[in-house]
Length: 307
Ligand SMILES: *[C@@H]1O[C@H](CO)[C@@H](O)[C@H](O)[C@H]1NC(C)=O
Ligand SMILES: *[C@@H]1O[C@H](CO)[C@@H](O)[C@H](O)[C@H]1NC(C)=O
Ligand SMILES: *[C@@H]1O[C@H](CO)[C@@H](O)[C@H](O)[C@H]1NC(C)=O
Ligand SMILES: *[C@@H]1O[C@H](CO)[C@@H](O)[C@H](O)[C@H]1NC(C)=O
Image 1 (cartoon, rainbow, N blue to C red):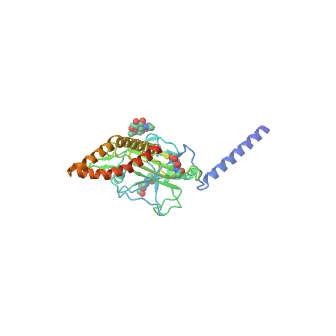
Image 2: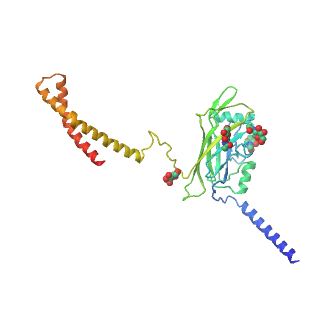
Image 3: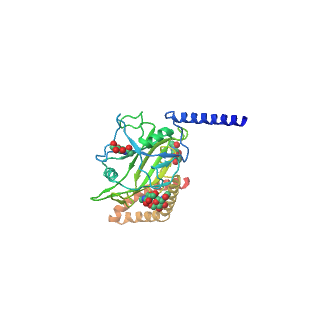
């Protein structure tokens, strides 16, 4: 008998914990922080395949639907918080309506407007998002609430008579809010086609092989990615410039003192004697220049000493 009693007790405890868990799961929008590697679902604005216009529900709210299903995972596109990786997302079959949408995107009639939850959505909201589009009660018409961060997918390509050329290689940039301010929170996101890469030819019935290269930034400032010529001035470049300036000054100084100055002095002497030919006027400049060299020598010494 005591064995049975403890079993019943244990079942009761399990029942109550399950109940509590279910209840907490239903509490609306208590958003926690993302952990590194946590999946982030991408949803996009549902658009009319006739006009490309956004679709609203009865209460005038924009209707977001999950990103098309990737053949690789069998799920809509997901990013992983803080994880930089290449994600292949092949949309298996481009049906007629989706082809029309692609035409709108590529022809810039309508952007592919997507969004990601700024912080993890509670399970109830997530389920809602996957099943029927998220009813975001705080969202007015057109404006995105704080619950989501917009991510415009700038899909580029060209429209041909019978088919489309789509640049399917894409970069995805995601900024997290600084950890000290709001840990595990997304601050900004964007995705864009690499239009330089050879585009993919698409007709109705084809697959759309999207290739996403995802990069994460720990704050909202973009680091400078250009280290070569014409980029930002680094400390080593500055030091290099100073050293070469000093070296050239020293060489010039040696040249003028050792070769040019004695020659000019000699020339100057000859000019005085030898009339006003071309060399005469040059000689005249030579004298003022000679004064200039005086300053030049002073400067040269200055730089030379600094080094
Ligand atoms: C998008 O909107 C169209 C037109 O209202 C609707 O038929 C379709 O089911 C919607 N798509 C999804 C995935 O809800
Ligand atoms: C997508 O996956 C299915 C089965 O999972 C496969 O039959 C099909 O060939 C795949 N399509 C592409 C474009 O990879
Ligand atoms: C994505 O697909 C390309 C071919 O299009 C392949 O070379 C690459 O290895 C794939 N990457 C991943 C992460 O599956
Ligand atoms: C932002 O993050 C980068 C690292 O990617 C860091 O070098 C930079 O100092 C940070 N900027 C600010 C304003 O915190």
